[in-house]
Figure 1 (cartoon, rainbow, N blue to C red):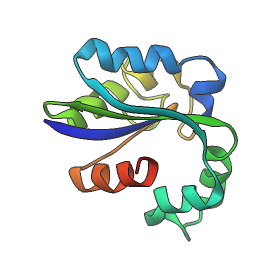
Figure 2: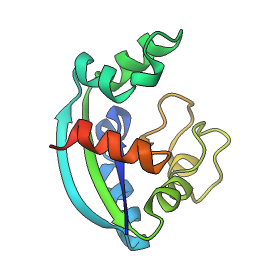
Figure 3: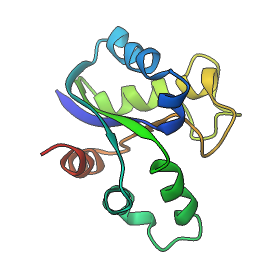
Figure 4: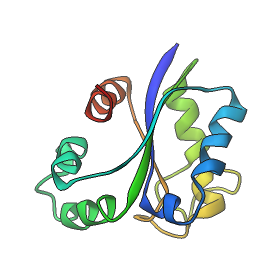
Length: 132
């Protein structure tokens, strides 16, 4: 069994899509092992997006992720990381295929509703950032 982190970002929470998004993961067969709502602080954003701090786009990324509540969840299941990333779809909602979360609900590259860990190492690191 593999674990991964997802974040329903501020746009998902403010649009009332978090339940729909989480439901898709559950319907696929993934198990929620941790779940909480929180407001990401600038310090937490820097820990989560450590590899992007200092890049040209980072200030707008931090402004976005700290702009409202997020829902953080740990999902568990066989090949959870790749399964979640397939369900979420490509980063840019405009080109994400219909049937994916971003393809169905996003028209943006940045306001793309969900963060999903991209590797086992990232998942392990990110889970410890959001859950003790």
